[in-house]
Image (cartoon, rainbow over all chains, first blue to last red; front, top):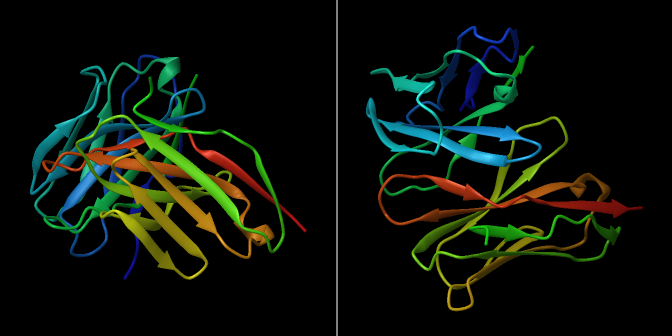
Length: 113
Length: 112
């Protein structure tokens, strides 16, 4: 099975702009979670989607949003970018009910200048 | 107190020796426990998961869970230079949803 894929892999944006990141889960996986990884804060949970519904949300401002499509693909959007949003954004998928193991994609490295 | 704590290391281990990594967590409602390996510049890779008290072995890796003492550990037997990486402990709290809370990671250096 192909793993989790994320696009784009690298992105450079300017403060104030917005960005959309995409994630395709492992085939058959219905749950997608997003995480932010920075050297200072480590890996932090952003949100989780299951069957197109947001099930959990982390402690991030409303500028961070996401959605999931009927084919389980997910996107996350960050509006009004700040320098502190520079990070590795990771998407993880899991099969769904009864299976807690999450498998990460390669990540999108976002740099805000 | 952080929800999931790990010693940041580095943990220096001679090749062929056993590397022992520890992780403590604060929420007694934690149900599922995971170990991820992350190479520099790469994304985390799931190497072990454990849900019940006791030991779970997979190849050279053994995960140990003690819910009463609120710790989970990872043993790497016959350590190889390729095991040099940061190991992240992650915990899922509760039954609903699947939010993982991560520790800061332990950097492991295996010296030939």
